[in-house]
Length: 337
Image (cartoon, rainbow, N blue to C red):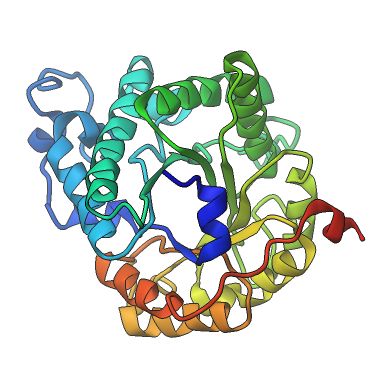
């Protein structure tokens, strides 16, 4: 099978869309989330989407199938919150290995299914590593600006456990995503480097930040360029942005990344901005028109969708980017010159 670096030179790759949006269609109840295995769990579990990899694995596999069938080259594992830090909300810290391993295994089995049917279009699995629900560089207490809810070392350890299980389950790529605090991301990247060194392996790493408002900064205050510089010491496959903004608002920030990096550039925006009911209104056609602008301007190598996107959105994007060459990926020497 071709490795992802080779495929990136040939065409714009398509990442999947939202997992949560698809799972909401099932209207799973508390009992569905619990399944047989957790029927006597002492704490409420409804809303813990990552747990569905253990209690409703076929539903997760079906979401992956729909995205691959819509044209995705890469699907993300159902592990956005599968760290000890995020799972503490459900008192499920001890399940971290199982959650990540099973989620990766399910995604890899579906990817292999599609690769076997279409060997000319290999399918990949990206281990989704979310930001956790804590921030290492800001205080959660307005009255105590020096306080931190989590330390770098706590994050590093939590991410290391997640990374080991994702790799054991078959993830081809590691995707550190929805980064609102770059210090959290640095802990994840440090953990990945540790695991790579201990295992003597190389793993492609995708890094995706999130611009949280019209000022063009992450929640921890970095511009697109500052974000790029602060992670550029790590050997990564791609850098990009996802979530928070719709596709049209991302254009200026992608232009900055595209001009300044030698890596591949990725974008998986939301389906517009949430409406008054917290829902996303941008249609597949509207979103594809924005993605077409990215491709026409030569800004991207990987595109996909975040909140509110569905297989219909991914199919529309996939159809559009087929017509365009990927953004040239410079060598390090060209970039430095």
